Image (cartoon, rainbow, N blue to C red; front, side):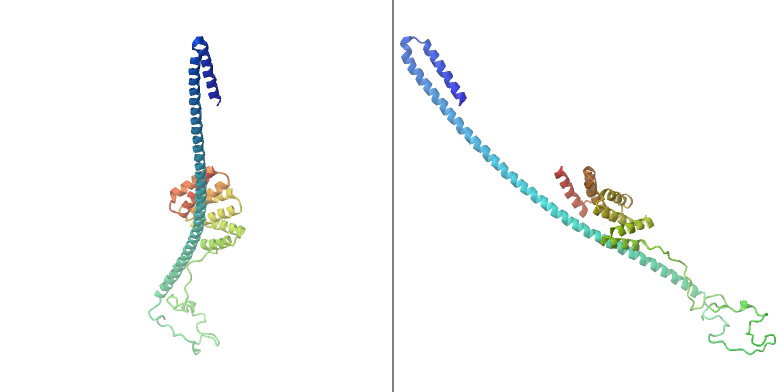
Length: 335
């Protein structure tokens, strides 16, 4: 409005200047024409202003409609994002439950392997004992009784017919008789064991419990939430059998207990033991996943992302890899 008013004033000034320069006799006629032209010019300016106002109104309306559309789209995107987050959380919870079931299955398999190892050891001991028995039986004569030996049964009293034997003295106890001619009761005259003799065990068992027994006791205390006792038992297992695969499980559960008692820095060290020294252990994927969680708890997000990407690359189809992808998306969304 200000610019159009200034434009009008400029036109009127030009018109008056033109009129002032005209001769006196032509003032009235030219004045009428000038006034007509000025009026036409004012009408054109008014129409232009009206058109501009209408265009501006339409543009403003379009802008308002666009803003409403953007707001609606933003609301829909936020709703979609919230739905995706809920879905990811549900999938993560499901994967975590599946991971727990897989861990329980792995523990059962480890326990079964330990039992099979003990059974194999017992079978080997029985086989060794049977071989010893067979070797002892093979040394016996054909009839089982040495040739010329007296039949079994209570001994008969012999008459004291020797003049050199004092009365009341048992035969064979005199100085002229050699004790080597009388074999022991459980040994035949040729040195073989009798058929009813028990073989002497050739091996001795250690008093130290096996790795499987120690692991089962510690795991039972872990399940019962007796963390102090379970930690001590897992530590004893690691000291007694450092190279056994069950020691890798022990390090893993030590890390789990330290996470549950809010010591993530200590948990990271135990997870690293599994990842470094027990690379074939079934707990490696879970150790890498839980190590990333401990890193997040200690505000080491970049290191956690590296662990998650390494887990996805090494075990792409594992349940832990699905959880790792969800955690990566959550970390990127929070940055």
